[in-house]
Length: 470
Image 1 (cartoon, rainbow, N blue to C red):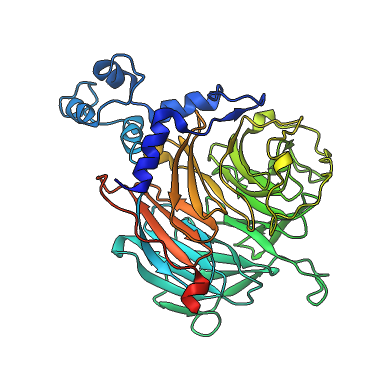
Image 2 (tube, rainbow, N blue to C red):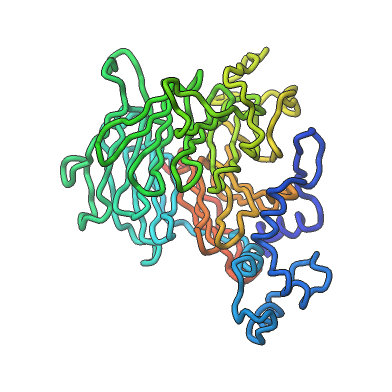
């Protein structure tokens, strides 16, 4: 039995991490999102009634298949929630197999919206796009231009024709993914068009401007970006110019995203420890936030939307993920967090034990998930895919070299994936299949799957990069 499988069995016996609710106690999440998650991931009511009676235990896969073939429910097929109920029990915990290994830190992992492509970004100017449907062959090998320190983010356009990449630089570059050129060296074999995000007064010699986060809109017409000058930028790709610059926070904006397919709402997370909601429909002469989400004690490293314009999660340097409902946001847009009374830098120091269980007295979050570690780099977290899991899980990388998966409703830590030797900054779950890919600072891109058996052992852990180079 694999280590991951043994871990899952231990969690099933009740050893999981408990969810911390908005009152500071430990409990099962009692909120509308709990019901929405159950509706998405539980079998159809009639199927559950016919096959299990009580509806509390997972319905047998064999019974569900037999019921579908016998048309017990009168629909002749599985509903989307039936599919999620089946697929969400098969977590991608077996393996991993190594997709690729580079000599520099892996910073970014991203599946395309249909799962046919996978993008990995590395520190030493390298981005690789793998064709998942063709055995993870490298479809495009990109050497970035004007790189500052590392690739900080990448984003594929919804039609998968273009990829943008950002760095500690005022310019975001765009690459034609659909061209026939496999080797894409900036402005040598292909043009990497530069999109200017800095102000006209930018001083290249005396000021370091960086883009930490960049995302395409659902229609592919705009980019939203978060920067080191505490601002949010929106770039109009058709007009080829900035359409919006918002002085959004009082510190670096580490993460931004569009809330839903309309593009009206934007979520942001900053080192000022606040998440903010921006409604572009309400902007008048003053571009103010629609509301503020208060609860983290330290800076925000990432935000991810549930895609419904209502719920989001954020990862924080206070070693916690928080779940938010924007209907509970504060209208006090001038709220300023109280400065900490201790000296701490997450890049090279452990989180102080005396504040590990401290709670923000103004916490507006629905729930808090703890167990992973957010140190050294901007660790990312996500909702699990809607199609295969009904978004019933939250998963995150961790600076302790692991990937953690939590149950949204119960808060249980349902899996911990151990393989990497360095922090796992990013990880991404395939939108349709039980496959998860993690990218670590050890330069390894690792693929986790559900193999269908309990006999798949974990491969030996790789030697550290220092040992490999010696």
